[in-house]
Image 1 (cartoon, rainbow, N blue to C red):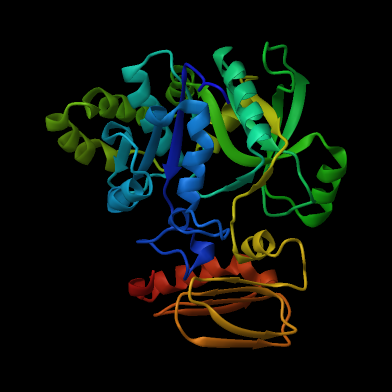
Image 2 (cartoon, rainbow, N blue to C red):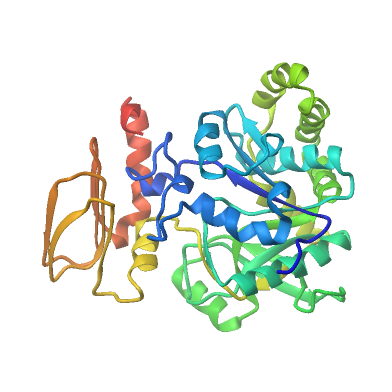
Length: 371
């Protein structure tokens, strides 16, 4: 892009531990702080680089936990201190994105914000930028807009967005209203959606005027909205911020923005969608990571790790090594091996979604030292 979008502010929620990628992703080193594509850059840095042409380096904000501040600032040395919004504890996506919207609206009442996860992989810069430009145009018209991904296969791993009537918005030729949100389907239903082509994957990207987004939160979650307003009013006063955060933040309801904003807005005809014609992956589990790094070759063993020492014979899947151990993999298909100093995971791509259950079990048994 020649110039950033004038009234646009990009927001990067950088939270969560990516529990389905344990033991690679941990509380102190979550998914967004890892290089999962072999690019030499973390997912967070890739997200920043993707958004900088759209917003400009001084108009990108990151919402993250206090424990991750130093790591985030190391990854993004150009980020202004006033654009790092710290959560004292995780409170789900409505609180995170709503906090950014409230602060930025307080500073700049007419600002359009776009929320983009810190831990997704996107390939196709020009098509991504075109989708965001369309979404900003729709947002200026007073809609909440999301970017849905044109499915490349009948996936059961994502929620879906069903497109509705076309919108007549200058600068957004592909925009439509959202008819409905659909939770992750079974395989037969996913095949129907894929053949229909009016269904898009829900990638969790939301673009709106900050005041419009906050209005939706006020209508659906009034107590949460009141807390966000208290936080925004005190945020830029360093003496007041800490006490207000300590008092208000723990009281905010934990609810995903899909439920607090997107679904109610869709029901009232106030949610729009723009299709994204770019490669996208939320890297939700090791099966996704294996596919991302295999180059489309199902017989390939993808290997990640700067010092990985691997002997492989007739093996496929993914192997992640953070140790100097020699690992030999012989005659196994779709294997997942993650070797760290204090934990070893062995599973298969078919069961990759079940890794979260291991994390839950470790919490219940008091083994938080490896989380």
